Length: 459
Image 1 (cartoon, rainbow, N blue to C red):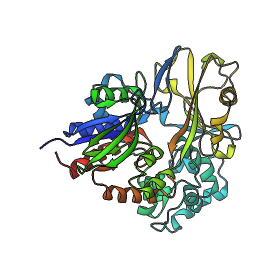
Image 2 (image 1 turned 135 degrees about the vertical axis):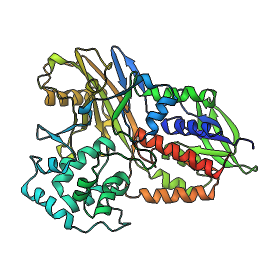
Image 3 (image 1 turned 30 degrees about the horizontal axis):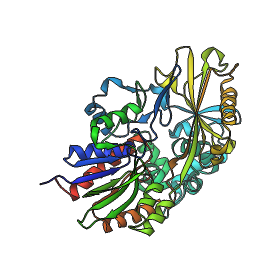
Image 4 (image 1 turned 60 degrees about the vertical axis):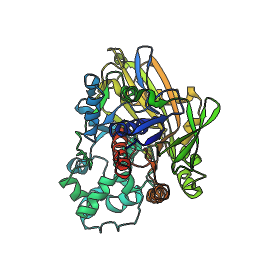
């Protein structure tokens, strides 16, 4: 049987991983990428004496597919795990730092919880579980079960680290499926915490260790290796303009190739494009699906890498990520001492911080002057770590559409995409706006997509 000629749209982690798995299954794949490098938002660069991950500085091993992929790509020697303190968090409230976790006993002892909040822990098991199909926002769900303080001091800081989103819009079921499933299964979040802790990451395909990981030369090591594995199959500087059906029963791609519009025919198409880009490409096939995709929200982020001499920090550095909740009304969402997590990020006598700003609550960061953004990042570090002098290094990276939001209309998007795929056999949609925003989620979604393609079109 002749191999199906398959186009993969986009060479971010989702597109690359999907192409990798389809190639293993015997498909003839061609990847099309708008830019001149693989990896999408995963970018590792050397600036002066610093190794900067301008995007995700790490991943969480949420699926056994990750170490398996690392082994297949011969990256085992450069694959590194962060230490235990990488999983510990502090939250900054009213100028003070408090360690937080999702352990029920530790949560009950959280010093800022009033008697009223602690009382909510006891009555929460008696609150009726959420009606199926209710599509509650995270804020509504948490307020109902555990109150305002639990939302403000615990959930919102964690949420800003993952989604940089607005909890009044994020879907509890889509953004936090494990948390929602605990309530559904046990009738109570508290009971669920005790019986199945959230820190126990399990995928429905393979179980992962849940540890934070990276590579000696940064996260781009993974996407570069995937690109090298695919070799000539990855076509750079090829921007997808339109997807059309052709007379052969397959699909035609209209591609802007360095200013020239070319047409190529394929049996199958797998899109790993962002929702807003795919919306333009499929408008001729389905205006309704195109409009649905345009409604998928992406929030902006600015990342500042800031380095100090260790001797200039007046506060003892515990090496935890510091989360700054929305109630603080700060542009900064979180600060991570990345050089404390992974070696080789900066000279030994210095410490390198990653400062994340913006998100759904502060989208205006994108329009700010670079000097103002640097000032915000530096002042926040000074406030937290009592830095005595100026930093020795600062670098900025801005992303206008950084993180897709799993808002309360998420399942409407899924239904629309499922109907679109049913109407257009051989056209598949994947990407981080569907199966989870993390690197682990993207790899698992890519694996599932490849399996789905192979089931429908066996080789």
